[in-house]
Image 1 (cartoon, one colour):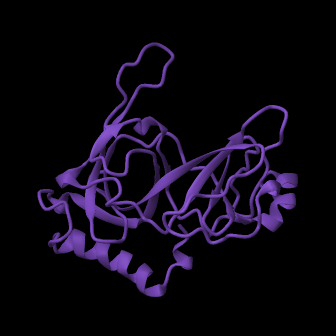
Image 2 (tube, helix red, strand yellow):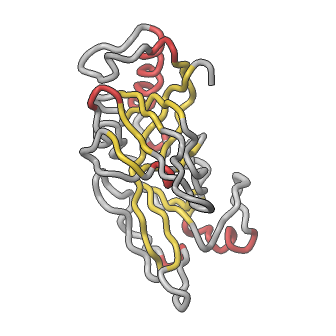
Image 3 (cartoon, rainbow, N blue to C red):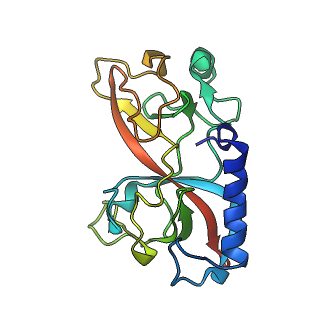
Length: 224
């Protein structure tokens, strides 16, 4: 998910893609052909941590999706620096470490958490492949008192979640599996990085793991 780990041509293509989409209009074979992109403004890439059926064009459960407003990769902490991170509780980039809920990216860097939940609204998203689409996150429904409302999501023009997934960005959330075994980055094996596109993030002893799909946000509504 770290753009600095991508080839320079890929990084340039992301920024060029955003510029073309938002100033010239979308051309085939990209999706969003029915969307008025003049209503979007270009932004520095943001990242969505998403869960869902890769083949789905819409679904529920967006209340458990999160957002990194900036690339968390360069702000990550190397595994061999974990003792210092644990001791201070704060990464060099000034994000707080939570030993009960921590994240890992494909190069073996401990990441800051995304912000939960993902705010309702529209997002211009891409996987830096062939498809760009407008993702709509609906407001939470009324699931009952003291409960987090369920949120629907949908992609425009029949795009699927897989279509807008950045396959090279891998991310996983680790939480304690039991109260008796520690769930700690010190248990992460140091081999096998980077994790290749499509592969699962490593299992860590003592932890419950949840792999997340990563979408790149390249535009937001002009009025937002």
